[in-house]
Image (cartoon, rainbow, N blue to C red; front, side):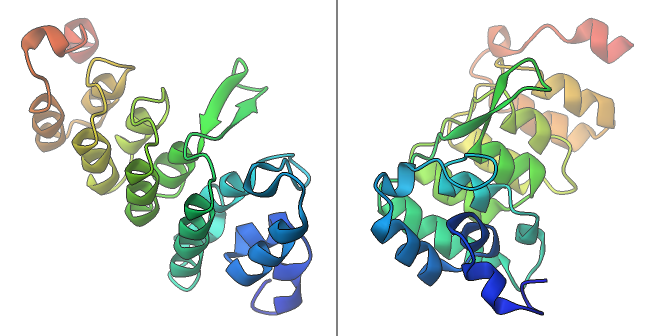
Length: 188
């Protein structure tokens, strides 16, 4: 719809973030009291969350714009660990990195967030990166220090029956003690 009606992407800061309209984001946040940390839009999220969870990240036309909008937000102090609380998921935080990796499979955005100190062991990203069609995001998380023993990423990989992915994951363990106890799950 943004292509059909470009003015929609400038209707609000949340819409500008979702569409990757960096100029509109800059204009809105120049007048916003709390800037890049403001709780905006219908969901009351920080602007970076709207970028990271935008379904338009899957569209090759929008992806570069969204990545550049995220870059600008991060350069201007956005929190790479910003999260929204999932009331339907035991009130667990859903961080930016999960939106970039597990939801949208965007290694470019994931790399930006990780380089800005996003936590690769955030209880969501590693597990959901194990579900993606390529291991680009999974490898990025592991390269940036995601703990293999943290969460159930290895168990999720075992569900896929992808031995190459399991080998990759296990290769990041510093010792056998770093691996979670998944033998019963693997046998199941």
